[in-house]
Image (cartoon, rainbow, N blue to C red; front, side):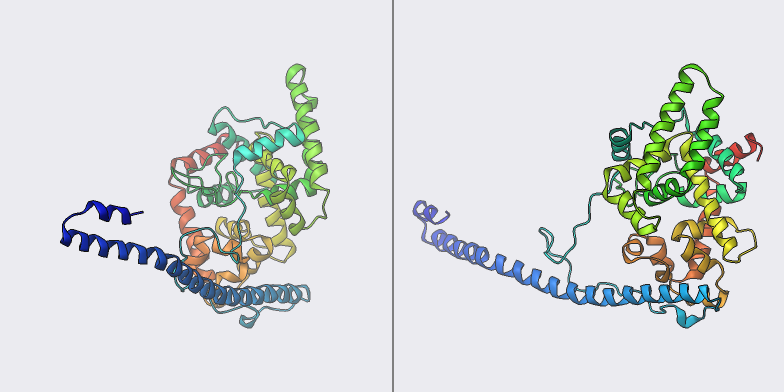
Length: 384
């Protein structure tokens, strides 16, 4: 390597300096792998300790959630001790050394994006969503669907303002706002509907949606009627696929995230007929859930968003929680570990009271943005 170069250096001092440099380089070549291995070992040990602590913490969170559900079924009031009051452990060990993932580190699958949803929808069901001519067309369709479903203008605009910052498009995906961003979830649209939600909604309410489109088809003639009948045929296939698993969140989640058909179903959110209906139905399902659980007051936009943000069971737990508990109970009680770690708002706010206040403040700020003002105007246009 470098040693032959010594033969071409005649000056004794230069030969001595170069020889020293050669010894240093050789030593570094031997030391660096050992140092890297040592750094990797230190990181792996620290990470292993952290993951054991985190696993114990999130297991306790899950157990407390299960116990709260049992108490609610028995009609018992929830108290502070029904929640984990410590914040989740945070990794504070040495940084991860460069290189490929360690064997103990789980590899997260690549997050699918709109192009994937469209591809699988076409391949698995022959479904190609009817896209709006412009954003305002979708906003008007969404406003009509929301009002027909029983949502208020204030609720719908408030949720849109929070979920999209007040400027989201009908095909906005979580994380993909601005240059250099990446998808952090499959959530799409004005209220950021998850792919799991789309599967569950079609499984539970697909017949209602098929009937709605069939009524539209009956009023059409010629090519528009043929196109609508084609959409209905594709929708029937998607509904049938959504029902190939039990009607449970976990089964819907697996179908939505691990199968081509499950990912393809999510393209329905982009359709001018289906997307507004699905998003409005998700929010109305939350309203019905709250009523069944005994919450008779009309939910504010922030309260309904809380249920949309964390799921109905977790959301109603927080909505019905006394203020004294809201100020003490960590937000981590209402998330799975992966969802919490991916959610900067839940981590930053820390406790329920701060989370609710943050949602309300963000929604109010978002309402001043052009997109939110357009959606508000769309409600006026359609009679809301």
